[in-house]
Length: 328
Image (tube, rainbow, N blue to C red; front, side):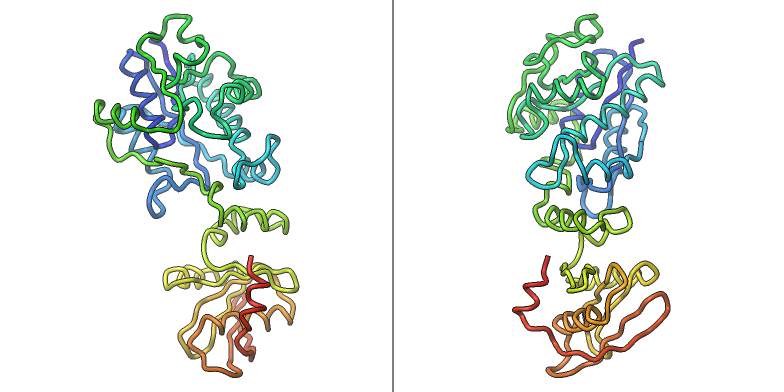
């Protein structure tokens, strides 16, 4: 039996692409890459979505972490960013290379993706798809069932492994055809109706670019870049302040990794300084924390905690003008 590898994201398009090929009698294996920037599912479900979709399709799945390699691509993508810090072209090249390695390992003959011609502005155009296939070394072996009739026949079609007449000609950003197919196939609980990538988010992108410029963009700091209010202290340290009870509780657990700041004796936000601060930075961070506390006007005590050490700083609430100058 002919084998194929499906690049499964947990979203609807890739699941539909897999279903189309499975129904032709091909033995399909799912391949899913774990990225720190996926937000396809609510909360922190992460790759559970792709696992759930593989179960719906009744196919085995291979999960691979690309965290470290992907971080380096985000920092310096060969083919540039999209509107955010999304290196979509370089991302696809990396995914295809990894999927091809898995394909060869299990003796499969071609790859399947849920890409739709013209759906993504950065990576899903005819010439860009050709470039990605070429640089990833997968020319001719990537079947895109949802748009296949609009593209050149692949090896799978030329060899008669799949029936080109049963493939589709979907194009553009409308999702109506896919939703109709999902209903027909009985697929449910899919995700990523729009972009499921955090790197396209305008707020996160601004913070990420700043972190890249200051050498702070790493796996340790990613959780902070997705939360809180962000400020750049005069000495160069990033200061992140919780916006709500949940974020404050999360930041409070970072005592062994960062320097914590909180107003003493009154309800307060919790702040995190991401590197050793200067004395001036401690004073400014304390002033910012007081701005987000129930402390009265005038001078107030602020606690600074670092790896078990405790320091008390007395400060006053920061002015709105200076606060905005420091905001990232």
